[in-house]
Length: 81
Image 1 (tube, helix red, strand yellow):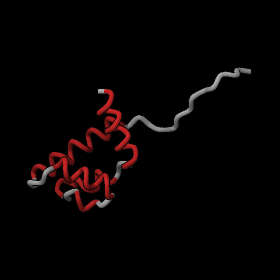
Image 2 (cartoon, one colour):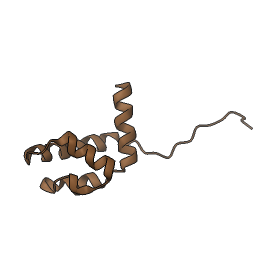
Image 3 (cartoon, helix red, strand yellow):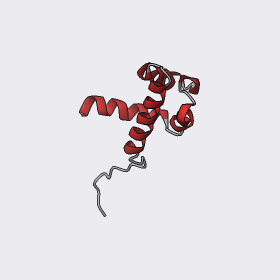
């Protein structure tokens, strides 16, 4: 029997999907004349989807992402990339 501790993780690596969704949302917000950074931050902090435009289906796209995972990935990217 192995007595070493095994690290177990069930989180899927969906960073590429998050990047694609954020890029699409960013473009949609820019096209509609919004400040995309402010709008995305407002959505992440409040979970209020009305911060994101419906233009190009951006609101439904970002709502498919888990906010906690998104925030973790943003912090990870900021610190380590």
